[in-house]
Image (tube, rainbow, N blue to C red; front, side, top):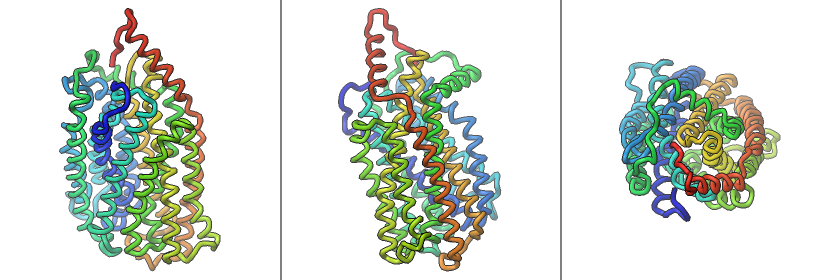
Length: 475
């Protein structure tokens, strides 16, 4: 671990690796369901079920990736080799997702195959990358700093691709219903993903490329899953998982339903579609400024729970007012401006909640080490990654069910949607978001590791490693 403040170059290059995740997350949540449903003509229920099936397959492999990452033993360390190897296949898989190599309307299993390829390869990059955080520093606030850079970079990647989508690849409502722009979106995203993963690995190489302190035991599939199950039974991780699951499902619903809401409820113009991703970018900058002080003064659990509740109240207000007839005419400049302003604040609070939850995982590593004598950064972050992907997929599935239940047909023009359908869309979103967000806030507030607990564990670990009888623990 690096003692004291981290070098600025290390923060930047570590965060840069998350651009790839941002590209994927923006594509999956904003565009994937509309692309396969509205453009390629696949039933929304089939798309949602295919993505959910891909997640079940992913669930069997993700924790194993984390475990293997923890057990990797090379002169470049435990994490870097994964980044160098997986980057190119991931970029190719991403391009194929948006240019399906099949004839006719994609089938259920064809969508599953594409989604599984992207998700597993992204795990092979993201899990090792994020697992470096507890290895790089043990400082409670500096860990938050690394996550701030990761989230800033991830959102920049996702928002930049969204801006390009709405201004270059899919600039008009008509182009958003044609496949050509999505193919270019996929190819450009593939290049960005490749540069992000390889560039981040090279930028961190001099800081983290070293032979681990001790070699891992011989690999055994039975022992691997035994270690994984033991890690996932850690009390702090179980409590975190409950809160994170609800938070990520809520986020998945919000992001995947956004294109439907902006088009059919808020009646966004072409200009508004182009401006919206850039406006949301302000919330990422705000998060970068406020999350550190919040963690210092209130801790991560309170920041996570408070951010979730604040996001629900602020984001839900426009829908409640619209349904009550107290909001300006949807589609007007006043309506669009007010909605964007509130979404900046709500999105800031939501990101604070998510980044607080993600940063909590770093402290679970030392709690598990205290109990077992083992460090399992990759296993725990694979667990977090599994929760996030499964929950996001669950959010997309919920959105697909909402779209199907309210009777919104593929290819429906903005002006052709009945007011009752738009109202039902808004009501369904409000109800689902409220339940999920309150569940997330409840569990995140109960996270059992405080800053004082974490620093006590670090002090004990340092004392044990420097005592005459101290023996370095296995990675």
